[in-house]
Length: 368
Image 1 (tube, one colour):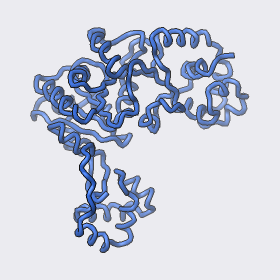
Image 2 (cartoon, rainbow, N blue to C red):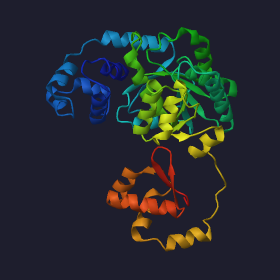
Image 3 (cartoon, rainbow, N blue to C red):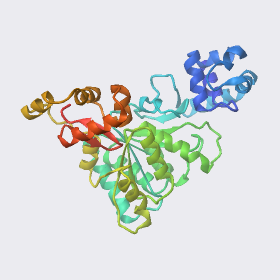
């Protein structure tokens, strides 16, 4: 009988079974081995499975491929992380399209308290390169883990700057661990294995394919608390990563650039459309991400007096927020107050200085 690890890997090899369906199956059965031993009729009842996918599961027999993959993982000291395991990155687990299986190599902490994705153009200007180095170095006192995609330009500059600053850094690959693209970054990748690591959701032998880069970008966004964009055109991978981050309710930050420069057009658009907070220093990043840790102090008498004068809807929204940052939709859902009224109350609380709009279309109670 195949082992649990074999069955977890095999689940990603079955035609027609993507990550969403695989997670439904794992959630229903509790372990991967039970999926392969389940009756066809029970498989059909799982959300989004149906007869065709149930047949594909029942007919899968290629466990020799999974055995070869396990030998490869063991030889290269790569750890498979299944979606139901505690070692799987908690931030990514909550994303609707999270991969059911990850392959991790190195000494990375995927549960680090502060994780920032840094992305940008593959052909940065001297200004963009220097901004990237300075911003990453400025985050050293906060011990932020820097995550990027190992590409030319801003990606590899961020990884290199993190290594130089003594920060952990994680590279997310758009292929398996049997290769490295681009090969020119092999030396930096080896250093990263000692001060972070490499992460992928692709098994060994996966051919290079441009369609794999958006899959990589979703992991960069999903693993992090926020995404920093440094120089980007109006289209491309950096903007895809920023859009994914917004869809996951992550903070998006952007460095402004020169008007008329194509390499700054993407950042300026994100800022203009209120999809990203403008940042120019590591302190700006720390403030936007709420990474500063000032001493706790009691609320001022003015705040206490204002709270006592609030109407029931205002108090309910503040109670709903608590110490969290929530979007308008989340506030409306949790409080049960109609959306039109939520918008009116939130605006009023902002005007009173009790509530603050934060990056990522979220709000925070200033008294929390």
